[in-house]
Structure formats: structure tokens, C-alpha cells
Length: 381
Image 1 (cartoon, rainbow, N blue to C red):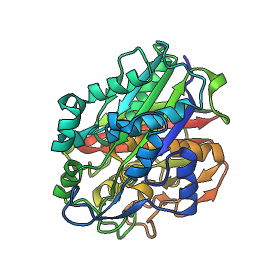
Image 2 (image 1 turned 90 degrees about the horizontal axis):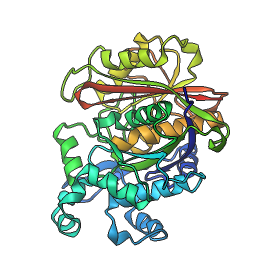
Image 3 (image 1 turned 180 degrees about the horizontal axis):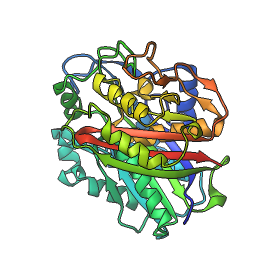
């Protein structure tokens, strides 16, 4: 069975337009969550992480005319372009698959001005994925994965399966979501937005901060084009406890089942850290803590990246996986921005400050609406 290697990656958030740029800012302790005053998104001020549209437009203009593409499409194409420029993969061959991970795609095309400019077809996720793969000249029908907030992790699992089954030699996975009136109003209706920049797992947390972002991860079966040190994608699995349309299981059953299937017989001591979903909502963080404890991982260091750039929805699993891979390659444990005092019932080991440590493996988890959960392991070799 083929091993699956990480060939390259890219991250775009409010903190930067490259993986290195984002990691540099995170190491400084910078956060991209600010108080947003934009009546087009929400009448009242709210905390969120927003990518600078002028910088995005300027950077995109170096590769194409930004007026031809939506904001979402510009992010995806820019991210893929940066990741592919760091590999020798010819995506015009039929041995490469494109996967798009998103929850809402071009959701801002619902707004009248954008609808008139781009048309109804740009609302459909399959059309967006088709446009992106055509831009890069890829001949294959792209895959779309849209399963709430586990979409990114699920896309990595699916891409790995495609390579291990020898259907493709390479898989280009891109996750993206943007802020829009539709998205903000949805989270406002749940009264789930934090009154401050979010504080994952903290005693004073009161909700999440939404963010927009995009990330690309390129998987390959070719060891010779993989990054050094080489990172492989290990086992992954998903589950659904069907607990509630929006509320997580009180027992952590779905996430627990996913973690147990993913780690199998691997001892807890072989996992160096966990990159948690960590939304900073009271119920999600409690559920994750219970699941980690049930899986015997209560002593494993845990972090959440959402305190730096918010919850980026369909992009979150990929952004956070790329950051975790960076951690493995550079032997660095990133702290959890906003965390001060443990605020969950299980005594899990939250990383409160960035530090150096020899690392070889990481467990990435994700959970989402409808009771969906996913997890995957990354190994350094």
C-alpha cells in the first residue's frame, strides 16, 4: 500500500498569505481577530478574523485579473498557485486530483451586486470546483467535500485514500470559506459569537470567533518530491453520533469513536500532541475534553489554533493540519491563544505557551454540526 507524503502547502488568513508568514506571526503571539464594524456583514460590531481585500486583490493581480473571479475563487487559486510553485508536479496530467473543501463556497454571490456580476452558477460548489481545476488545466472531475466543520480533515482522509488505492499519484486539497452576511447572521442566530476574541478551553470562554481563510495541502505518493523532513499522513476516520443538529454529544461519543479508530493500538505516549477543534464554545470544548479523556489522551499536550484567526469553517481542518505539520517539521509546540485557566471538567493538558520540543507525531481532530467528527494522524519520518 502506498505511503502518502506531504509535498507542499500554503495558508492564507488575516495573519498572512503563506504558511511561513502565518507561523511567524503565531510564534510572535499575534492574533488576527479584531473588532469588525461593517454593516454589510452585521449591523452591530463583532469580533472576527478578516483577510484584507486590498492586499488579496493586489497579490492576485500578479497572476490574473481579479475582476474575473469572486473573492472566494481568488483565495483558492492564490493558495493553490503558491503550493504548486513549490513542487514539480504537473497537474495537467490525469494522475492528479483536485479536492475542494468548503461549507459555503461563493455564498456572497447571493447578494444582489455579486449575483448580477457572476450569475447563479457560481453559487454551486461543483461549479466552483470545476472552475478552479480548469484554471490549472487539470483534466479530472474534481471532488467536493462539504460536511460542516470536519470538511477539511475529511478531505485529507479522502485524498489519502485516493492515493493509497492507486487511483491517483497526487491530490491537491484546498479548503476555503469567507465571511458574508449569510454566515455571520447564521452564527448570530445561535448566539454563539464571543464578546471578545475567542478563548479555547478557557474558564471565561463565551463563544467562538468566526474567521475567513484558505489553505492548500498537496499529497503525493512520490517520496522524492516530499518535503524534508518528510511527513506522512497516517490513519484517519470519521464518525457521526447524530446527537443534535447543532449541539455536540454530552459524552463525546462520536469523537471518541473516531479517535479510537484512528489511533488503533498506538499507545498514547506515541502521540506528541493533539491539534483540537477547540472552537471556544462551552459545549464543544467540554465534549472534546471528555472524548480525549475517554481515549486515554488526557496527558497528551493539546492546542487550538482558533484563538489566532478564528473558526475558518471548511478551511479550518486544512489550515490547522498544515500548522501541525509545520510543528512536526520544526519541533515546535504552538500555544493556545486566549487560554489562561482550564475551563472544562476533564483535566486535559492544554498548551498555554509556544515552546520547542522534539516531535514525531500529531493527532488532528475536528467536530461539526449534525454530530460529525473526524481525526487523522501525521507522522514525521
